[in-house]
Image 1 (spheres, rainbow, N blue to C red):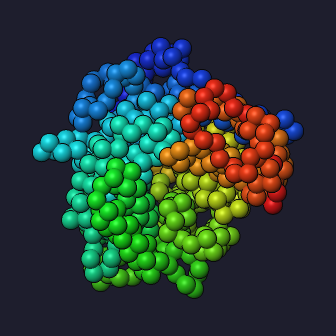
Image 2 (cartoon, rainbow, N blue to C red):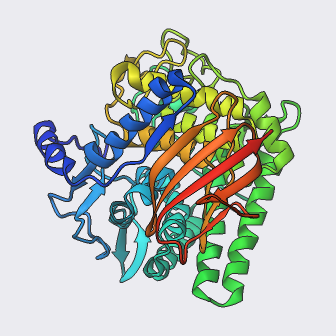
Length: 507
């Protein structure tokens, strides 16, 4: 769901013609092959091709209105950016960032850069992430732009990225940081609909779908949002170091990240349940009370942004509730919702979250959980030949869920559903880790996936073919072009052309 104030649907016929025009210009696409598992080829492999079509063709669009260059950094060529989906014709800050982090910065870096710059603006001459009525998700842009640099090695990104990061973090800290609690206030990362919140904040027949239409929602302190701030501060510190800024700047950002992570672990951790709660109330007679629902995005971000230490991360993955179709947005149902009428942002499947969760599970070695999420999302997408926005958590039926007393639509060709699926494969299973000087591999191969190959993967000036054999997360053998290397690392310098990487894994 997007804010009711900003939503604007694309002219569908025009977008169809544009997609056809761009089809011939789409970059080369990686191929995913399962030599020993035809059933995985028919599901995971087929969905991989569908996700690439979603990203590289259907949702790569031109800035026809020429209204996405408020920063002056949007470039033509390519003149294109990633829209949020088939029913959303704009980039959106969180969508632009999630899509770039998931796969776009790797597969279409120039388009990803345009998309990230398209959600920034100049204010009083200074670059900042665009300011709108969904301010709580703005800082996800900072890890995304840092990732853009790590993937591409383009140092021209650094200076404007640091300016925007510094300005945005200062703005948000001044307006939204609760110094007494040590956490940032605001709704959860992407739950901009009131169906994502329990009474007294929300309710099944509540009027007004936008979360901030309801008192107190701006003061809650959500797990997902605060974990993103930790990642944003870490990325800002890295930008400062890479630019050679005064040491105190990076130290300050790192210090804020450390303090925030400590506050999350102190305030949002439920020691009895051995997991994190959803959010802390920040106002009213419930101020300071922890709402103990499971937030799928929050748990994933706690792992991926390093808020949870390795032992706690393994506990989270082992103990998380998953529905028949995978981990839901929020669990259990809020009062008034049920299996027949699930809330739009409640106990329901958003593939965005499942891709994040598969990646998080893989990083702690839970390859069975990662595989289950990946296969499940592949089947959902292939059932309708489309990566939709939302599905029923039990039946897998396409549905937008319930909110304000009626059922909503599930939007088609949702970009972050596709890029999160690619993220689960590329970053989770194949373990791609982008570093300033090259590409590190830390794969997590599920049982039964041995022999999986990813070919024609673009990386800076190289084309990489990667084959994984065995199973597990320990690298037993790493070869580049048949030569054994001690370190599972492909240097960015001096290896232009096509490279063949072979990795054997053991549990």
